[in-house]
Length: 180
Image (cartoon, rainbow, N blue to C red; front, side, top):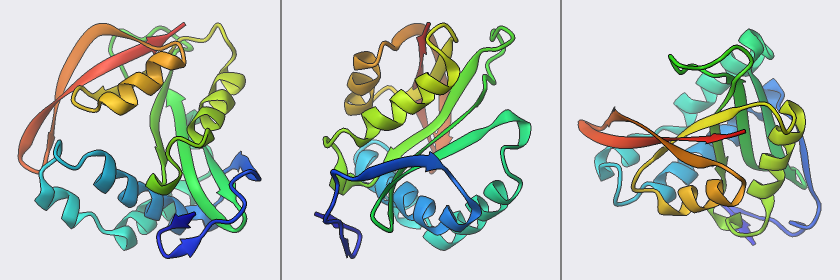
């Protein structure tokens, strides 16, 4: 299986672990490749083409260097030496959040491994970390049916709250999903 320009041979042996600063380039690469694939036809092509893995690497390096600041945690999925996915979790940023509510800020996989259970493993890590009773929320583009289906399979439901996010000069509808 190909990930970027690298062959992943042992997808059966994926490790989920806390992210470290050295993972920044791997996370950034997954981030950009996943956005370009998942949001094609949803987010303007010019915006997706402008995504820069090197700039994202710098952003992720700064973020990971500070460690789990502000109670934010990031885990990576690693297959052999390659980062193939990641998830970030922190306090809910919603105005109506209760104390202790948590939010999944991002969960992305390399497109080459979609459908192989790695996202499920990342989601189980988050749920295991927070506990079954903690209310989790996340925001998803309304047009991203694949992601919405994935979240529903993991116990998340749209709660009726929506907002617009401007990306590439276009306002895109996001829907909030909650679990717990």
